[in-house]
Length: 158
Ligand SMILES: [Zn+2]
Image 1 (cartoon, helix red, strand yellow):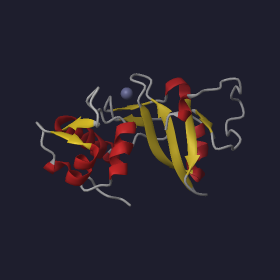
Image 2 (cartoon, protein in one colour; image 1 turned 135 degrees about the vertical axis):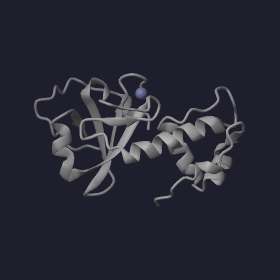
Image 3 (cartoon, protein in one colour; image 1 turned 45 degrees about the vertical axis):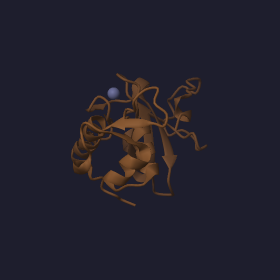
């Protein structure tokens, strides 16, 4: 599951379809779509979706840096800004993968890109001390002092 994308073979002055980029970096098409959701820019108006080699290299290099530089419990790495950011409005959604680990997602306060990171359920208390964590899958909120009227909709666009 942990494919390491090889972006050295991506050519800077070429454009790639999702499938072509998947092939050249050695990942599944699905992974490329996940990258797009995580901030890999596509060339606007193009159908099928096209990605410039330059952007793919930028994105994958930034992603590698992010893995080497943990942001700490209060921040996410924004692939668009290439900076660790605190979540917009101090809010994040937790989607469990299983009983022990899941994904936290939040919006970048600067560019509104969706930022994701893995988080273990055991560490969620540490995270929740720094932001309001919601459970769109239907668990009760960790942060009891949070205002339930703050209903947000940005958890949907995954
Ligand atoms: Zn950003």
